[in-house]
Length: 328
Image (cartoon, rainbow, N blue to C red; front, side, top):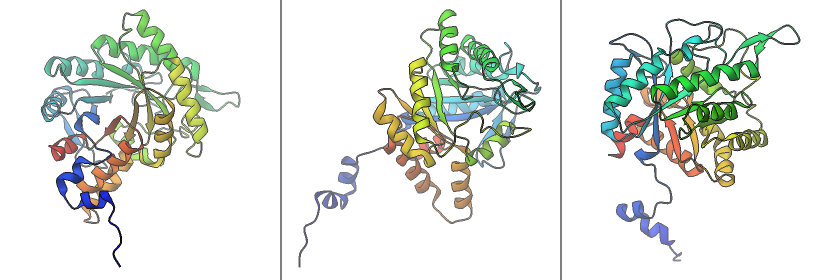
C-alpha cells in the first residue's frame, strides 16, 4: 500500500531545499560572547571547568575581541574579576576598574563590536553575594535590596562613562532597572539601552561560572533574590516589572531548562528576548563531547537552535566563537 509523502518530507530529500524551508535558523548575528577580564597583562588563564574559555587581561582580551569581530560576532559581554574585593564591591564602580579600562581598549580597537557589561557585585564582594549585605530582622546576614541599588547605579554609570554600548544588570534586585534608567538619563546617557536579567533563576547550572568569575557565595545561597525554578508565573511578573521600569531587552537565565519561560515571554512582550546559555549547560556538553559520548558541534548547534526556536532574539553563549566558525 502506498502512503502519501508529506510535502516537507519530499523537500528533506534535497539538502538545498531543506535549508530553504527551514523554519528556524541560528545566525552569527544572534550571538553574544561572554568574556572574563582581570587586571594585569599577558594573562590567558584557561578556566578548567569551561574548556576553551579563559580569564583575560585587558591586552589579551583586546586581541580576542579583534578575532571575534573578524569572525562576525556582533557583541561581547564583560565580567570583571578584581585583584581586591571588599564588602561593598568598590572595584565594580571605581573609575579605574578593570572592566572600565577594558571597555575603553576594546571600543578603540573594535569600534563596530558592541560591548555590553554585566552589572552586578558578586565578582567584586568578599562575601560573594550580589549586593550590600546587612543583618536582617532575625540577626542573620542577608542582601539589603535598597542599599544595593545605590551601588548598582554607580557601577552602571562607571561603565557608561567608559563607553559601554549597553549595560546588563544581573543582580535581581527589585527596582534596579528604574533606578539605573533614571540615573543614566540624568547623566546624558538616555540613548544607552538596558538589557535586564529579568527571569534569573537560582539554578544548579551556574557552577562553572563561579569558578570563572571567582564569585561563589561565602555563606548561604542566592535563593532569597534569585527565582525559584518552580515558578513560571512569578517569572512573568518579574519580566513585566522590568519592562514597566524601562528595560529595552529582557533576559531569561539559564536557557535550556527554561525554554517555556522564553516562549511565554516572546509571545507576551513586543521587545527582544535574550537567553543565557549558561556555563553549566556548556560544560556538561563539553565534558560529554570530550569523553566521546556526543558530537559537540551537533549538540551545541541543536541547543542554540532550540533556544532560538523558543523565541530568543539574542543568545549569550560560550560557543559564540565556535558557532561563528561553524556557521561560516
